[in-house]
Amino acid sequence: MTTPTRAGRRWRAAAATLVAAGVAFAGLGPGTSSASSHREAPLIAADPAVDNTDLYAFVSPERAGYVTFIANWQPFEEPSGGPNFYPFATDAVYNINVDSDGDAKADAVFRWTFQNIDRRGGDTFLYANGPVTSLDDENLLFRQTYTLESSFHGEPFKTRVTGAPVAPSRVGKATMPDYAKLRNDANKRLPGGWNVYAGQADDPFYLDLRVFDLLYGGDLSEVGQDTLAGYNVNTIALQVPFSDVALKGDAKRNPVIGIWTTTERAKTRVTGQAGPVTGEKVQVSRLGNPLVNEVVVPASLKDAFNSISPDKDAGIPAVVARVTDPELPKLIEGIYKVPAPATPRNDLVEIFLTGITTKANGPIKADLNSQLNNADVVAANFRPSEMLRLNLGVPVTAQPNRLGVLAGDLQGFPNGRRLTDDVVDISVQAVEGAAQTGKLVDALAAGDKVDANDNAFSGSFPYVALPNSESVNKGGGTGAGGAAGGAAGNPSASAEAAQPDTTPSAFESGMGMTAVAVSTSAIAAGLGTLLFVGWWRRRRGMIQP
Image (tube, rainbow, N blue to C red):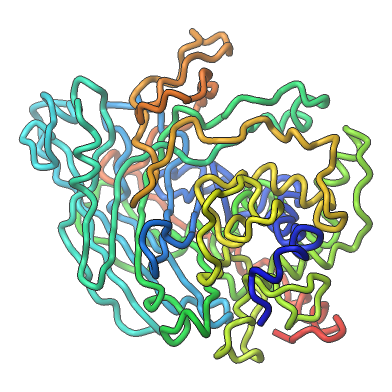
């Protein structure tokens, strides 16, 4: 197997195409269903408490032999959004899934369920009725705990911890004068060396979402504002040894894993019903690579894609067509006169669905992040699928480059995803052919001019910045924006906040009595036949799924 080091030079000139995979789907136009998903599909937009927003996976920089997964839910949490703020849903199941053998099915599943401890009763509407200095402070009237279970190789789930505290929503400086302490108290070390955290955090995804306004105004005039600055998310972070997720427990022989997150709801549920999650469950949200949800699959398939598992991806011809002939380069050519690369873009398809490997006889002559590179993988069982792939054997970069693999930093996106990776700029350059030419497209070199998060990240688990406590909307409704006031105390925080968003309030059990039927499985059934399989088999030298 070609080592990541030897693959480095070739990567700069060719493997940026891998990054394009993440964007290829960014080239798929308005909507798919399963990746970086800030309100990306109609059904899940109405249920934000279970909406995956982003997934990160990287080798832990300060702890050798451990990998960290960070999964976020509930987009656009305005810090002032009381009185109920943003709890995890108690009638849902939150999962992190890992595939080590390339069959697009989970070999390891980490499962969280949440419980409420609500002492408000009929006495008050307050989340807290005084300063909160600890997670068990009597002034904290509403709190949550969670149960973490794990299953390996299809075995029954085993409880790892129960009754663990969730870091609460950050009400404000007066109510929670030392939120860092609350965060630290919510970090838990479990047997086996696991670290786990659940609670609120600053949304680490940074970008300018004016891309939807004729690609930044049609003349790149609408750039430079981090749309997500000032907003929070609900975060689950998990750190486990390589041996728990690598094929046969051997990360030296089998270093590549694939990761995706999912959320499940009861197929039929009634809000206000107390008790644990019961009855048949359906998947309502899914996320792997960033930006797939918003800009890959057609709008008509968004909800369906959120409901299916990765092993079904190869049977969706509409997705394949969007990758081989992506929409984004055509839009850029029409608006900015930058010629679109020639089609079909089979290089993007291979990279996106298989990871980078010479074993698929594709155009990228390097081995980086495909499970086919694992020594003990049965190639006949390999299944092309959309997931975030990570090579655990790539050394931690001393000086990370925000452009990741595109800049020769093999530890960066799309080889996993670090918090600091600029996935928007990477993706736009890749889909415009930077992988093929080995150089950036000058006309788009500045990207969206948002090159870092508004709040600084930590160098240790759980890495994400503390949640913001200042209101996002400081422009008086004029659209002028305002100071971000990041809660992490970062002096270099952006001076402007994102514009206010009319996001629905958090959806949580117990807030109403409306019967809700979740029926995405019916949509998924209409996705079409496995036409992609025939297409794949016709490719000379390709390993057949």
